[in-house]
Image (tube, rainbow, N blue to C red):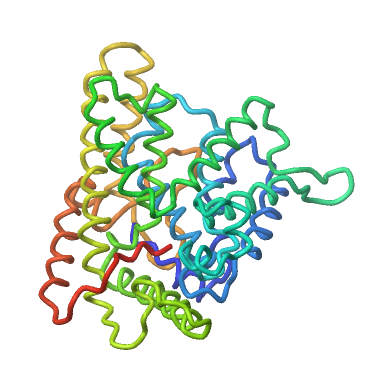
Length: 376
């Protein structure tokens, strides 16, 4: 949880390739030579000069997503194909690929070619998804060894993986966030909610975890949150400068003059982050309840419950280095460690930390600008 992707990139370079290979290398459905070449190409397709939406964010978000999935126990309880697990992580790695530092509002206002192509709907998200699909459709390697990364997927698994990746990337559209969060809350309140066996519930849950991971810096230690927020604001201001140059109205939060970083985060933390993490804490409790009730029903359920319990009990003894990728090998199905969450035992405990952070911002001088930053 405390993994610093920015520091890893600064000291070792190629952080997206590092994180991606560490998380995906043990899936037998992905040939390792093609995996390495694909990750190299994916990292190059990100625009490294973006302060926020670079390959570093892609790596950071993916690491956070993997932590949330393993911490929640979702993949330990559910019978999920490796093709689905791999597709989820690939979608996270490529969820912002090709981003050029302008948001959807800017693209619509300027009638950008992407806005025309995607009919003003989830413009960047459709663009990222299409870019990733094109990269996956390319062949990697040389001679007889040249093939696509997902060449071993059956036709059925390939179709499901493709639909899942598109769905997860489209779920990162900030304009849909509150609507999707409300739907997730209502569905989670149903007695029939079961993300461990119901495919629809599982995809809905994964989509919410992806969105939470995309704003994951809001729950990280202060230094990481502050630095990622500063980088997001750099992109906002660069967009505002271009809007002024074009004679356009400056978008919310993009006005450089008189801008205050602290007060700009209040709306983001209170209306986007806190509700999201609160629902994920509720989801974690739901999964634990399901684990308890299901553990005595069938031998397979007991085995899954035992695996989850073992992972949780072992996690506290695993050290969490801050200068390298700290996620475990996939084959071990162990959880990454977290100085905040693992030590205190749950996602829910960290909500108080975030609440205190937003209250602290409210006490700072300065008014809240119109709109809330979504880091998109």
